Length: 325
Image 1 (spheres, helix red, strand yellow):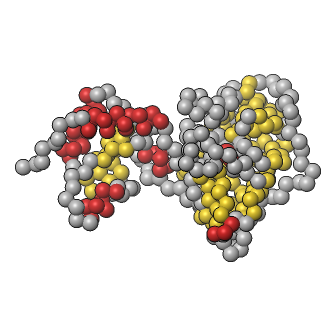
Image 2 (cartoon, one colour):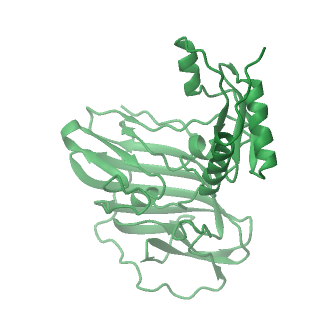
Image 3 (tube, helix red, strand yellow):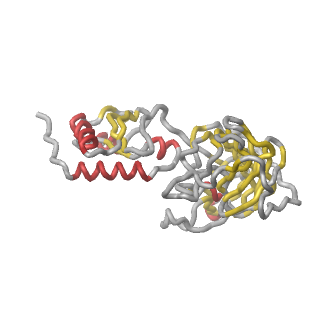
């Protein structure tokens, strides 16, 4: 039975279970060997880092991904993946002739740009791709990458409490899932692995007949949060928060020069709502990191966490807010 999954605005997801859809095109047996070095190009190459000082090895410049299509064949009983990934993007530089993708492990069988096979090479966690024709800023293009093999399983310096990021196989439980945050997406598909390059995704997953696959990513529209600030919320979907506490938090942020945004979370229900429903007599204010990053893209920028920490420290050091009446 074939059930294509709906598109969702998201980014590399941090959890999945899988269902039956059309299989990726099998790569040819005589797969090309990537060049040790790419032939020179007439034009410019994008940078192999998006410029994040905290995780400088992630991300790439020269293009902006608009949409991914992931066609993956998976089986929890076999620690191998067969994939065909389509990346739809637009150039952000004039005369773009070479770009890089974040990708670790696997055997790459072919790379095609607009249906034309092109030269590629592997280098330091990057897949380097020559474009058949240089593109000017705004030029749209699509890349298809066919690959297969067992994923690399190595510890992440950013998540020391798990053995590895990427796909985690559990054959005894007939399931598998992925852990992609903050740098694990590149361990299972080629991509521009940084939250600055946001895109939509479509998943077409092939699994054994007795299994079901689920890929999800939902975000509330119209949020005012941003990656470099703390968020002070006035309400969630269950109703408004305590106004004196919210005003106090805003005053602390302004007095201490803490970057912040005001927002209303009409699509989300906070944990405090469950406590109030249970009968607890609480006055609630809500502050958080960037909601668009954490819920929309499964990433949280360090700057947002820094500003949130400053606001928590300021609140803990401030006088108690008197009860009304």
